[in-house]
Amino acid sequence: MAQGDNGSSKSSSVTPYEEALDALSSLITKRTRVGDVNMEERFNVLYKYLKMLDLEEAISNMKIIHVAGTKGKGSTCTFTESILRNCGFRTGLFTSPHLIDIRERFRLDGVEISEEKFLVYFWWCYDRLKENTDDNVPMPTFFHFLALLAFKIFAAEQVDVSIMEVGLGGKYDATNVVPTPIVCGITSLGYDHMEILGNTLGEIAGEKAGIFKHRIPAFTVPQPDEAMHVLREKASQLNVPLQVVTPLDAKLLNGSRLALGGEHQYINAGLAIALCSTWLKMNGHLEDSYLKHIQHTLPEKFIKGLTTASLQGRAQIVPDQFINDEIPNELVFFLDGAHSPESMEACARWFSLAIKDQDQILFHQKLDNSNFSNQVVKMRNGETVQKKSTQILLFNCMSERNPQLLLPHLMKTCADHGVYFKKALFVPGLSVYHKVGSHALPATDSDVDLSWQLTLQRVWENLMQGNKVTWLEGKSNNSAPEELNMEMSASNCEHSAVFSSLPLVLKWLRDTVQQNQSTRFQVLVTGSIHLIGDMLKLVKK
Image (cartoon, rainbow, N blue to C red; front, top):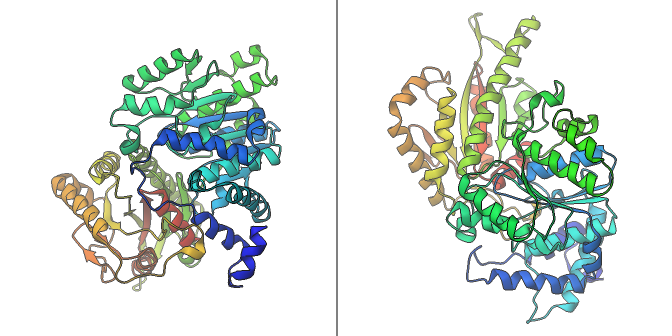
């Protein structure tokens, strides 16, 4: 096996897992996402790979739930997997991207695949493809390989249901080699990846509807008219029974909360319920009469699935253990991988409500606890001062995104909820896009190119100038110290700063908390799923 052969020539400091990740990294193409690639041609080659891996029959026998969309794909798939697992089925879940480890993309029964199993299936696929590919049919690209690997894992592990999240678009996505899924879902549509999918909602909807298959039931959520028109048209052409699902009524959870935060998750949960109900019905596990009642009462197993699902990097709250061991709740990260205008608004709404929730919880802890150490600080002169909260934004986005669209949505929605950032921090990510694995992280480079972060800073400063009156009103509500020590930053302006690396940002935040013990710092980290992953790696170290 190549694993063994390669291992003998590699340095002994590289683990077998890192060796596999290096081989996987070799499949990442150096060109940009767009290039002059013929999408259809590249998609059709996938059928040759399936033949090489002897997966054609296995895929046609799989009981697949296929989900596309702009926003909420990962959350919908996560809810769907959790519901069906709680109903007693063996589940396989394929999602993207990963935050910390590539194995997060492949979940068996809700748990990421073990290193041992990953290595077995990885080399099985990699070796066969290496032996059978040539200049005419080269090795698959990174995402194509991962989708093929997912099909191999789920077939070999004999899961009852495979939940496949589309990576990009739909029609030419690697997951769309599925000939006959059991049911398809389209989550909320919006403007994203327009350089590939088109400039109008209609064009984007057309690409997403590419996962529809002849007569296979499909569900979507309320969409803008232009998008909905295209979805209905494509469904009609393929005789697809397309239904629009309303958001889940929170009362059906019997007093419990959805496991994933944010009001928008009720839309995703409603879609997940429809997908699961249809999958159960199509596989003979639910009666029609039972399905009719599901709008008014949810089965206990559905409730458990919705209230226990977990997805890193989406509306995730992580207290900083490094600081909070000494001073509880004084530095808390609110992480959300939002990166489109619509998801920025949802993220801002979630953050605004979450910090109020947290402040309320801490306030009640103060009332219940005679020490109330996390709410009141004793000054040197013996006086006590009630702690106040201040908000910091930590942001980065990929250069193909438009910060002129993202940042105003974030700022305005927060301001509408009475939330104003004391400082916005812009920083490049740690991840390198041609490597996977933590051993591939670059060393901190003092010569790092900060031109994009300086552009983001200019956008923010211009926005702040344009909203000066609103900001000044909000400033009186923001209780951070008037001056923060910004010596560590590469570029400091009135409302923002650029840092050269994430570890430096984390050090600055921790130092600032230590220097300002009368203030609780709540940090919203958003703009890029890569930034979220990098931050989680650092905070959880």
